[in-house]
Amino acid sequence: MNRWMYRAQVKPGKLQQLQEALRSEGEGWKEALLRQGAGTCSIFAYEHAIFIYVEASFDSKDWSWPAEILQWLVPWPCGGEKDAYQALMPNVFYDGTLEEVQSCRQQRDKKERKGAFAVLKPEMVSSYVFYHYQKQEEHPGSFNLSYSIGLLGELLFSYCELPALKESSRIGKLATDHTPLNWHEVMAEHFAAGAVAGQSVWTEMELYFAL
Image 1 (cartoon, rainbow, N blue to C red):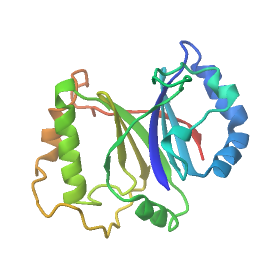
Image 2: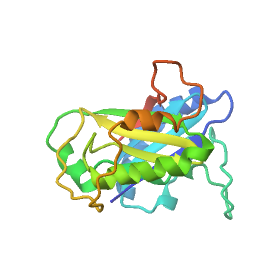
Image 3: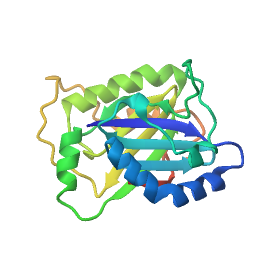
């Protein structure tokens, strides 16, 4: 199994139509996703932006939309022979392995899915990736095993489940201990201006679809 994160975009003024299509096609699409090899899938929306988190056995390029939903999305330039309607957001941080997350899920009855996005300063992208890999491999399971972050340009997409999962037994790949103690202060310097004082730089999104 793999976990994939994607970004898609709704046609101007068509978010309600997309929401209705997801609702009407939801049950049939869930069955199709399961047959395709998906274990869990969450789709979040904020204005025209769509974000997808999926755990599946298929390759990242094999994600596909039902025709009834596809009609409300904007083609994504990808340089291929045919249009894509989503862009892969490579993973830049995970707090727990997928095996750990799936194992912990079996021990609880309910889960709340959370999706949020944030924007980095362009010149701070590489620094953000560096610090997060360092934290991931020096202190695995330090936050929430289900927490994962994808990156596309300066755009971040985070996914997690609540209540938090915190039972990691993984030994990280780094034997060092250089993760900053003032983590949140250091991270604050990486984000683009525009956040309201006293509020999170992360914007939470509405869950539109869940498998």
